[in-house]
Length: 497
Image (cartoon, rainbow, N blue to C red):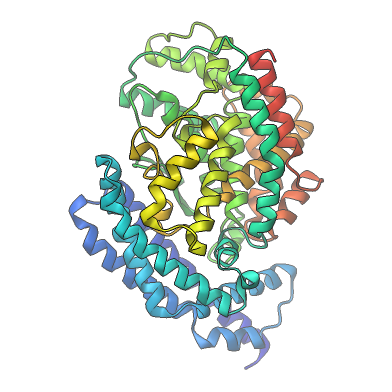
C-alpha cells in the first residue's frame, strides 16, 4: 500500500464514520426533545444498532493498516492520525457486544431516569443505574487491560472526556480550591443583607422569547441551530447543525435564561470550528473541560457580569411588564445571589464547584466498587448535608437531579469544575485583550468576546491537546488562581465584604 493512498483512504473512511456519529448524536437529541414517550424501546434498539455499526468501523482492521502506511505531510495531518489512532485503540479495547449493550441500556435508562425524577422515585431508577454501572466497570477494566488509564479504571474513563487528566491531579486541584471556596461562601452567607429574590410568575413563552434574545446577543447562528425544551438542558451537533435546549420553571426565569446562554457557549464552540476540520477528529471540541470553559465563560464571566445584566434587566423589564427588582444594580446582585440550594445547574458561582467535587468523589467510589447503587441515595444525602449544611428534601433535588450517570457519563462531572478553571484563565486574558468589552456588553452585544474566543480557541477544534490550547490562548499556565481571584473580587463587591 503506497503512502498517499493510505492517507487518502484513512481520511475518506473517517469522514463516513464522523457522519454516522453525527447521525447517532441527532437520534439522542430527538430522544430528549421531541420523540414520543412510547418510543423508548424502539429508540434503544436503533441506538444499539448504530452503536454496533460505529464500533465495527472504529475497530476495522484496515484502520491499523492505513495508520501503519500513512505518512502525514503537515502538522494538521499528524494530529488527525494521532486522534484516529487513539480512538481506534480505545474502540478495539472494548468488545463489540459490550459497546452495543451499553448503547442499548443507556438509551433505555434515560427514559427510566426522567420518569423516576418526575415521580421522586429513585427505587424505579436504581436497578437500571446498577446495570449501567456494571457495564461501565466492564468497559473501564477492558480499557485498563489495553493499557489505558495507567492501570486505574476511573482514569481510563476520564481520558475519554479530558485526555491527559488523572483523578489524582484533579483531586489535588480540587483540594487546593476548596478552602478558598468554602471561606468565600462563609463570608458571603455571613455578610447579611442578601440580594432580593426575583418575585413573580413568568410565562413560558415570555421566557423563551427572552432566551432567544440572549442567544442572539451572543451571536448564536439561528441558520445552523434551534432552541427546544428538555428535562435536562444540553446542546447537540456540530459543523452546520448544532442545537441547544433549555427548560422553563415559571417562577424561576434565570434557570431558563442562563441554561440557554450556557448551551449557546457549547454550541458556539462547535459552530466556530474551522470548516476545514469538518468530518475529521479535529471537527469537534477537544475535551469536555475545554467545552465547559466556553459554556461557563459565556454564562458567568460574561452573562452574569454587571454590564450584560444591565442590558438584560432592561430587556426583561420590557418583555415581562416590569420586575420586582427595581434597578439594574439591584438586578445584578439578584442574578448573582448566593444561597443554599440543592440543584447543581442552578448553583451560584461560589458554590457550583463544590457540587462538582461531591459528584467526583461519589462516582469514583462507584467505579472502584467502594459504593454500591443500593447505598447511593444515603451516601448522596449524607455528603450533601455535610458539604452544604442543608438536608436533601426530595430525590429529584438529590441523586435524581442529573442525567449523567443514567446515560453512562462516568468521568464527565469533574470536567465542569476544570472548565471553570479554564474559563477563569480565559477571562483574564480576554479582559486584557479587549479592555472596552463592557461597553459592548452593556448594549447587549457579546460579539467582541465571542470573536476573541473564536479566534484564540474555538476555531482550532481538536488541533491541540486541551491544556496546550488554553495556554496558547492565554499565554499563561493553567492554574485555579484567576478563577478564585475573580470570584473573591466579584462577590466582595456584591456583598460589601
